[in-house]
Length: 343
Ligand SMILES: [Zn+2]
Ligand SMILES: [Zn+2]
Image (tube, rainbow, N blue to C red; front, side):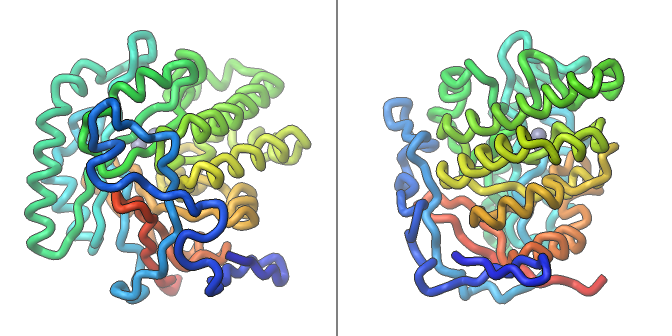
């Protein structure tokens, strides 16, 4: 993959040499039945890199038709699996990925938490997603059973144990905690922090993102600058610092070296930061490093599957992207071209 930079617009050029299993991501995904879908002994997460695959010619470019990040009432969403599926289908999605939260260990709780509900409901949720997947297949819609698992530093074994033996199509890695502090829950927490303390939190976030990728447990890096949620002005100031440049590049290099996808999420548009995750500075580094992306709405209600996807498509295209990717069990990240609708 090479990039042409013209008048600060980065154009992504697919070259013949970029086709299958080329470059840093030549390592292969485990075959079906291993890794996520296998026994504990089979866990091969740390080596689950997504190989490149040729552009899937079966799918002509169309508006974004993939949403890999949706929650349900099994956690803190407001709608059940069926309702979310029907909503996603009505938005014209061809690939619908459910990615419920994973239960957190004791001590990692939000002010109003849903851990017990999630633990109780997860088996039913997984069954419902599988059933919906069967119905979707009959209509030519692909429904995937993913999970958004927290990366909690020092709790890698806990996360690995949770993932092992469960039948997920892909795993999204999410950073929501620093220590046991759920940093995206309450603006008041941020109001109490000095700018210096906020800068410290941003730095820790990218340090954690690096560690998350190095853990090898995840396919997709969720909302890669969620830490800006309640303090975007300070976050932009921090991005200008030498520390930020260095930590950010290290973290995104770790995304690349782990063969992971970078999530591009419209959820930020609905949050106080009012900006897509990740912001333009991070997208620029992502294109420089040749990262592949995955589209996400992070929907928690029936109104938000595929939320603002036209805007998301224009945004990704402005950085040279012409396709998003879907992790597959077969060993490669499948590419789905998208078109850019007129404003
Ligand atoms: Zn999340
Ligand atoms: Zn989420």
